[in-house]
Length: 324
Image (cartoon, rainbow, N blue to C red; front, side, top):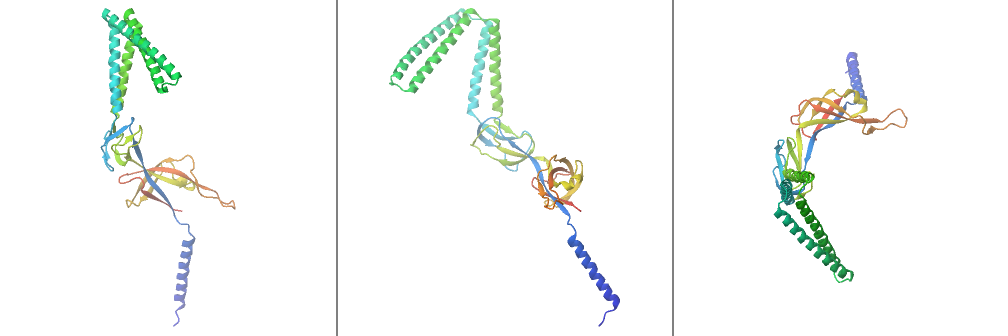
């Protein structure tokens, strides 16, 4: 059976159209799809003082507010320093009061007796040191015993000098400069107490901002140094998109530009606004050909804020279709 010529021509035309569409599709440049990633700000929180972790007050995934207690440290050394600083402050305050009031006769006599006792102790320590020194030179005793004797003599000598100074001050009376110095020493000792108390307050480490707990790097009972990031807090209010953009598309993504992007994890698309474009390129993704007819295509980092950050989490993939 022979088909009519009109039908044959129609079939040939249809075949030619289909063939042309196939050739056009095969040689047509595919649409460029950019892939980026959501990022967020993560804070690594550590204490200002070293210590042993006494208790963790949060767990992974917990939502915390600014000021929320994250963990507690214990430091017996700081407690001991507070005791020392408090005692020093009290002693300095007493000296300042004494300088203001002046010394009584009984105090002068007691100061003289203290100096004489300290002087006698220093003389004894010196004689003992000379004996030990001679024995050490003969190899009879160890070097440690020699060093201990010398340290005892030095300490006793300094104690005697201090006692003598106290006696002279009591006998001569405090001058205005001495009263001012005593008052300044009392204030300095008070400052040391305040400093130690500020360190003690750092034994309770709190969240600097609201967020979600994403990491815990130490457990109760472990000793951590100052500044060690024990807990990581992800700022849930801060999200942005990072793209590595070819320089050929840079003009379309300047600061303030808006574009649509698809988020596969959420199954939706939304608008992003560019707020940062890197001043320098990072690296090249396409190298120039040897013929010299091409050039390196470099990438620039571009950051954009989402119109709505609900559901966005760091690490999510974002796709941006860029047609040709």
